[in-house]
Length: 397
Image (cartoon, rainbow, N blue to C red; front, top):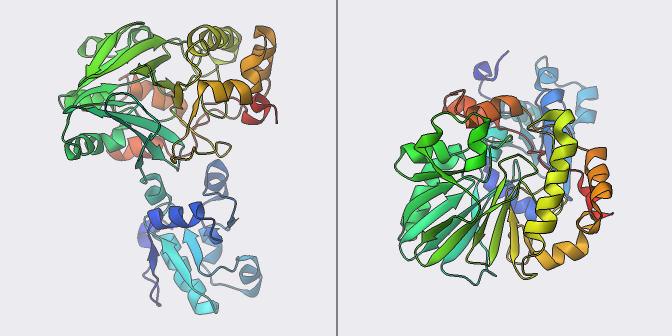
């Protein structure tokens, strides 16, 4: 039985908007969730949090009714939030539970697809340069992007295809025209928006080194190299080549104040080195990463703000709500940044998480070698990013 044929519940079921659920979790409110997706989907990714109680019972176990054994397995919440992939089977099951239990069940609107559609812009308040820098946050996957606005012009770095229109609208709302769409590298965890924005008339920028991986129609984009600069109003974005996570991995320094490190350095970890050349090429990539961190990133001023392309559950937000930290703070807190090369390489190769879901198809799409439609592109990138090495090992916890 597919979700499309689930009947309407006999009792009214209220919907809970994903953004409201996120607010409750961030506020530390107790949240009880029944996730009715298949176990494999639940294991791959699900909603989590310090005050979240979540239980997975696949929807098909409810199709023949709700017996006492099943009721005993269902968590009791006030209310109980029922979640599926798109919001149809969970609405049906929430209704069945309301008929059988003496407490309220609500349906997460649009299910995990709705959760994946949350995308918020938070200003980096400590940025002292020209204009304003916003950090885009996608909690479902931990993806981060950036919008620089200054003097009627704007640039977005690491945009997502799903939200391409959003960047144009946000720039317009800030009284600016979106001039540049810039990628730090060929992403393996989400579909880049650079190609779509380029087609919309925004100048697409990719690292010159990434074109060597087989980017289709690479000459349609600006191919940036180390030391190149882009002006956005009075602000300057400088290209800083930092290979390691990929051969084309590139950082961007905004007005000598914020370093957008892509997947090279996060506030809780560093990049994994195996997504381009696999396990065989990972040791050499790890040495490239070490060199980039030690010779291109860490020698910069301690007050420069590091802003990566991802965050994980291990990351703590700064006081302004962004996932950022200064170079000085990261040097003090992250044990891996003070290791010698051999120890660093051994550490990050020792305990890497599973590779991102669908990463081979995502890479092929970002190279322009595959052309999924909007729905398929959205589906491909659902789930955690898994682009970092083990946070626990790297922080020395």
